[in-house]
Image (cartoon, rainbow, N blue to C red):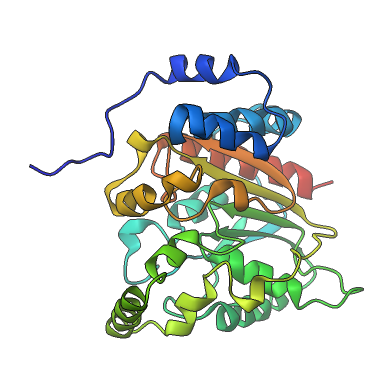
Length: 308
């Protein structure tokens, strides 16, 4: 009989107390000795506690917002940048439909950017730029899922130094703004790379789109673009080993020795500039009821921020 989970449930309260007893976590570098002593679950808890402390004022402000619909118009548009395979695999949630519904319930005019479901980062960034222009002078909140974060990053990297950003808010939901470390593992041998190329061909996915997701791709070897005039928030999913869903379990198992991971990225290496909302207990797919509550709270927070 196959296993449904990578590990049994843990006493998370006891784990939290154990990690807190190690003393204050003052940097991401402190995660390594914690992982050596307590494993990936201990390091994941340490990362969560570190981000809670570092972004405490923001986290508390968001959690003061109600996780409910908000009547009236937000006076802003939300553009949703979906993930890869969002048309072929809507069951994975990459179409962001749940985010669009919540955004409309919070008063935003909300729509999905018509990116290519099997497209490259560069092609889809051009589509995003065009649809941002169509928004005119109104306030815009961009919400991105998974690889959509790379498309936002590529668009920002192409702006001139004195060019104002085409949007005022960015909600990065479990994104891969520095590339997907899981792709490195998928292509790290000649045999794996050949298999990856064949799989991409069978799926109709340009292999260039796969390669663009590598953290080592030339596009991502420059400093992260400055977010001038943009309120940026990253929702960072932080799972324990036992939280990881079936589709990501093999990737999590391969990556866990390198540090906390959501099954797609190494979390400590995937935090862009801006505020961070650590989302406990779920992997890259964001399958937890607390994700829905966080999205409502964050949308209401952004509504308030964009109104000022």
